[in-house]
Image 1: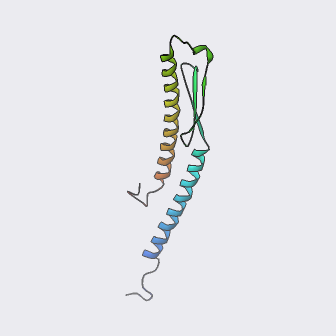
Image 2 (image 1 turned 60 degrees about the vertical axis):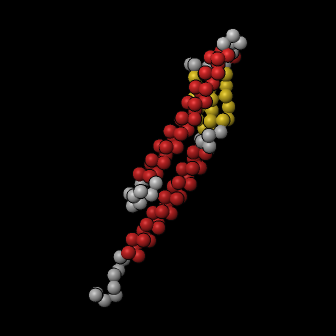
Length: 114
């Protein structure tokens, strides 16, 4: 065996993995903060209904153009509201998925971790 044993072998690799894990955790927390402070708007019916959702999936507002309020056709208004709300939620989900994919893309040293 060589004098002094193995240098920079397993111990160095383990330290590098720890640094990568810490950086990944910091990146994840930063991404989470950015998403939580984001808002997503979606309109339906050509702008007749607009829903706004936060990155934490909380509704912050729903705006309805008074011209689309027809007491004879409440069902249409309900459909527009659902479309706007679901669209805003999908935007928030898509952004979260996109951000997670970017974060996971940098984890070549941790296969199967997520």
